[in-house]
Length: 376
Image (cartoon, rainbow, N blue to C red):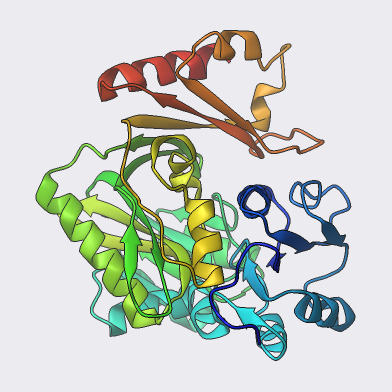
């Protein structure tokens, strides 16, 4: 194992080659590191930017051995990397985040149980492992509720809104009876998130709280700073720090919250940089991907100051219809920063890029963001 800190010239690895891996790779290479990406997709957005792209499955022992031997440290781009692969990699190099933390948060059932066991408030939930659990689960959450698969669900996939016992039974059957979590509805006022980094010594650097709007289960807009009371924002920051601490987490992570009846409920934990942290690329002294490099390499964590109010807007593949996107309209504004992910094929619901709108006046930034969102 290499001694910390790992300095420029070292080779860093990442499991996963989507847009988060691409932005990590750009940050690492900008800082002078070499990058090796393991991803099975020959058109991997991160692979386009890396020094080496290992085109293989995440469980390929030969590829994992090559990655572990070539890299001083390896991180992850998404939570569904098999924990066993992280354990295998850790035999040869530094791995951050560790397999234990990832194994908890990549499974909704384990994550919800862990949150409850550690005293973090959540929406009402019940674990559904078989049809016999449905009746008791419905009593615990009430209706309406959302049935979510425990593994591999994201951006609204693997989720069913149910309003009755009959609908719940039908949804569970459609999901082929795999393990699920049933979540009750709350009196939702807004959704917020906190992206943070935590180092080996347990020190945390937390980014400003983001206020998030979703459409069809996919993040649409993030508004920073979040339009919430200072006390609530500080509570979100404190809770996120405590979640990371209890997980023993090292690296960048996000904690998503519901604000319901004036209180914070933990919704999900993401063991990686997060879509709601993309505003940091243009609006903070250090962005979340440089922070990921710093945490992975054992460097001091960067300054997370917000330099300007900002609104981030996701660009989905739906925009590639009717002659769009209209980049000329977007780029006519000098305070808009465009980030595209190098994906070859645009599909409805697929994240193709995002743009950040910066303005000293948050209301002005939001107004322009919404205007451009319509015109794009």
